[in-house]
Image (tube, rainbow, N blue to C red):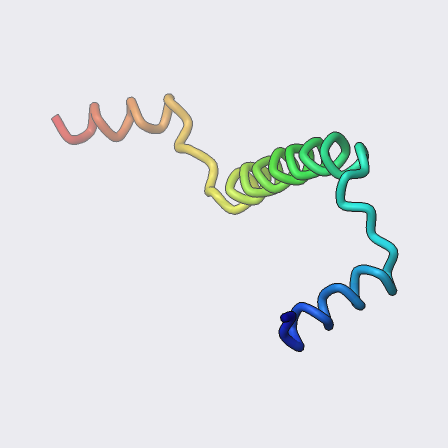
Length: 69
């Protein structure tokens, strides 16, 4: 005996005609997820590089250290 949920899920998959054993789901899907992950990491690195202030030049740092002594 099936429940209403089972009937609804069976009907949903029939209506959308999704083939869950299609090779594209198992090959293109993980590759797409990998590319999205790499893109998000690249965006994160770019944003952090953009918002981080520039370091103090070495000449100014050496002058500050010399003036403290």
